Length: 296
Length: 325
Image (cartoon, each protein chain N blue to C red):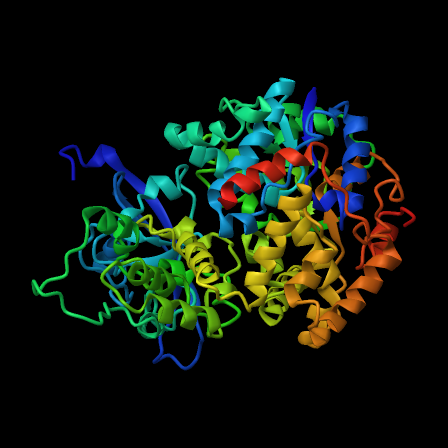
């Protein structure tokens, strides 16, 4: 199994632990990550660039898709936001051949063309759809029995469901719960799991952003969660980085570790917490790891 | 109903959130109903059946039963839907229990009936009517077919309140103008007959709870039963506000800084983005970044100080340059 690996900006910026954990996990699973194919790929625009110019954003994504097509490899992302923005761009282009042709005209100078074949897919879906949950389970070294985990998807991983292909891939709707169950942990289901973490308005309306962080993390904690697991590094940045500030706004210390999806997979595959960089979080993972009899 | 009624009945299990303002003993409660109903039924058919034959005290609101009037918005399994447009087999294909609640972000009057006062107050905030500064000599305003077609998506709004129900911002801040009202504002701003475009944009840009408070979570796009896609309209309003020079907001600076970063280097410079968003001279806000900066530094999560360009960045710059023209 080999993929054109698109790590996104955040896993090479503010969440380097996500990048490292992904590489470690893929090594154990025998998933070959091609780091060269997408080397010249740009940012997806993250939905922010699209606020200014949607067609420009779609052109950047078409260019990234064309790079993946040139490698003849399926495309892998590890960021909910990249996933959503790419899927939306892809849908707009495939729904409208004239629009796609206009965009491709912008790529001819570089000798690139998006043929509509490349399809972005998150590691979360790849584990379920390509690798297979049973094959993954067969690699488990340390089942995380007794651990209670709240899923947190990130908006772009669940909406709009048509662009994300939910109608043809029903298992995507509860993909994170399936993974939590596969590592033998217990799912803490809570209402906030598909809502907004508040990150996009962090610098615009911090008060609202902090309320969202406080609501989600305290709800999950009150329902008994030991940690929250997310496939979105931007959700991680807000829920982890700003949890203590959000907690202060409601007069409580929440202390809920926020784990990246590959870190969860890695723990169950027996990779050491250091290798997964679980010591690189703002909310400490020490208590969580000692519950698992693992040293932080 | 079909002719062979017996063979096409199915069992439906509804769990309904109840509320009675006259019942001082309990705030709200859940009640389950088990009924047999025609397999093609909608959730509304099931609720009407319950009210007619099982429990006459159940309050619900509906009128057209054809997703035109917008009266029957409710939460089905956690998301807002018009129940007349929602078939039971679509939400409970294997006979699962269906959870029915009143819409969110609206005050509940009784059981599944909500008050739309909050909704219409939001709509009124955006002055939902044409404002023109002159009467054409011919006596009527002629708008091109194309310009009216452009407005169709927003004009499809039937004011059911589903988008408001599931808006993640309204959940934490009832001062937000909300998705329905902002889509309505867009409808007038993009109407060639309206002469208050700039004033409207300025209000929506400056006001607390205006266009920049949207989180882009897409709940409104997902739940709208009419394809209005309010969030897309909000994004267009942001773009239009920047276009007419309203760029003195954190939101506008954030979009601009993002654009510059990707246009220059091909990727996002996470270290400089917040600084440029607040403005380099906004000492008060910049000081607030220090604690998270220190924490990130301590655990080794700080983004690189020297932001690198992607290989072949000149191709990205050329694309940006062409779009700038």
